[in-house]
Amino acid sequence: MKKLVISKENPNGILMDLTPEELSQRELDLTYIEELKQDKINKEARIASAKAKLEALGLTTDEIKDTFGL
Amino acid sequence: MSTIKVNNISSRTGNAISFTSGDTITIPSGATLTNNGTVNNFSDCVLISSTTMSGSATAVNITSGIDSTYTFYRFYYINVSAAGAGNTLFMRISSDGGSSFISSGYKHTGFEVNYTGGATSSAVQGAVGFVQLGNNIPNYGDNTTEGACGYVEFYTPSVSRKPVFTGLSSQFSDNGDADAYYWGGYYGTATTFDAIQIGASNNLYGTLKLYGYK
Image (cartoon, rainbow over all chains, first blue to last red; front, top):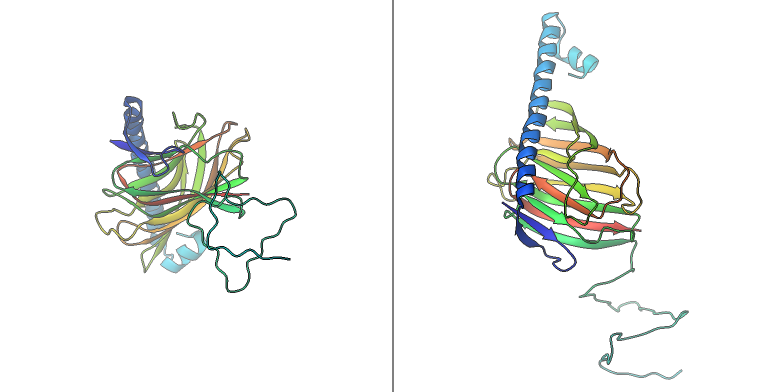
């Protein structure tokens, strides 16, 4: 794994290996990013569930969209 | 007034031409002034750095040019994609010249709108581990000419306070939808910072440009 470091001495950047600390941080980042994605998926599922329940009550798709923004 | 006509003026020392206070340079109609080098202090907006990412690194650290020179900075990411699907693009700050980047304590929120061409949806995003510039950015392997485009603004980085970030981005998502993402936030501890890092889940492609504004 590499990083591109831009500095005054190397304005076009110089490729460097990630340090062990940076590799550890990258693993944490990948886990964190997956958590954020899962949060989004869970939220979308809750919205879809709420929408289905409203439709079961007899509301039309447009009524749900205009009233609740779903 | 007399006129001296020459074909070329060469410098014997470091400064080719020197003027004194009150002098005026006039460029008449039809004349062209061409810059092939570096121009300093001619504009309120100055290009600080331009970086091409060619899929060889997962992070780009910009460790110079962020100081007290400018009131605010605008950082553009242009046609940015990453290897593999489902990449998140993020930014972090450094207070030690890029030796390390702060990885917690941000309060970032954004509003993402998606349009498939037939239906819209939206989602509110939040993150504490970084400033999130985009998620699900285009996969470089799908189409090398498409990518996420957007910018980040940050302000007075040399003043110790809670740094505020604003920005927006637009992109094709992995599956061809249009994604617009408007966001803002801050880092929750007062600090100065002098370097930024752009990172993603996988190796990055595209162009980065950092501008300073007076």
